[in-house]
Image (cartoon, rainbow, N blue to C red; front, side, top):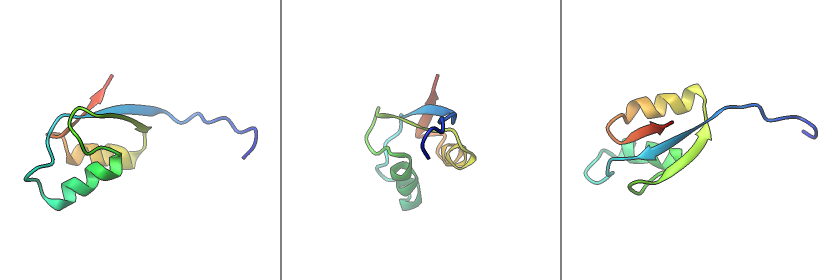
Length: 65
């Protein structure tokens, strides 16, 4: 929409754990977040869905302040 300001908050997440020898569901969550290789960072919208995905992978991702 023209003229609409995007006020959505974003968060930066970093992958700190390897997807090797992890269940396929965890690999798919990483891919959905835009990650896949160690020490990569992405900026995503701060939504309940993203927070839930991060909560499922506390051993593999961290929120960067």
